Image (cartoon, rainbow, N blue to C red):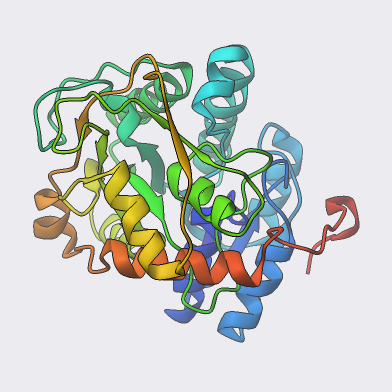
Length: 347
């Protein structure tokens, strides 16, 4: 079975490609490498000993995307491609609406034309906004507080409308909580452009000496140590969740939503402590003002995924920290080999 993975060179996409290849799937990647590096896909092939096929194209280019579907017998799509920086989305919202929403429209139009109606969509817990009811279940009220989250919400609604218009579609919406960690080999991991937006890559770059210190946004929340609590999930557990979703969509039709999280929250200070234990490095930090829109506590209710997808996260924050540190030590500057995507072609 050929699976098209959009954004397959990214952090979650590359780890999912590893799991797909290891499970015997044929993998085709579409990625414009605007926020990723082709080196990650080379390393996916090294880890698995298997080849994948790559098209260095932008999903906004419908003509190029048509070519992918004409040249391959695709049976399902896992859709990761999209911009994901909350802060940047506030600064340039039109860029996010165009890139995330319009590209998904184009993808669905091409899928429909080629009668490929199985789709796993990479959504986000940001669609819930600053909710106070914990743990967060899939039926919680949706009120995203930034343009990035609103693009995810819009796409979810778009996909529900698509199914209502054509009941042959089978669509799974996966709402991630906070992916961290890396492949146990240390050869693929999170390689953010510029200053990291997420906690653990920031911590690991402080530990490796790339950044001076961590800023903690508020220590006066109503939590056990005053810092914000989040649900952190190992990226490999998350990748395996996509395979479970893929199994589901190829056997039924409809639209279903699942949280992918551990069901347990950890504070910022607990994450720092876990990483210090894993790395043997002291993480200097400074407490600064809270960020607007941040909630005190947010963690998932993962029961629906456990019951219906037969999926459950199994890795704890200590293993997540060890794997993240191994990746950072082996790749202090991320993916060292910078390749011009125009030179990669299709292989």
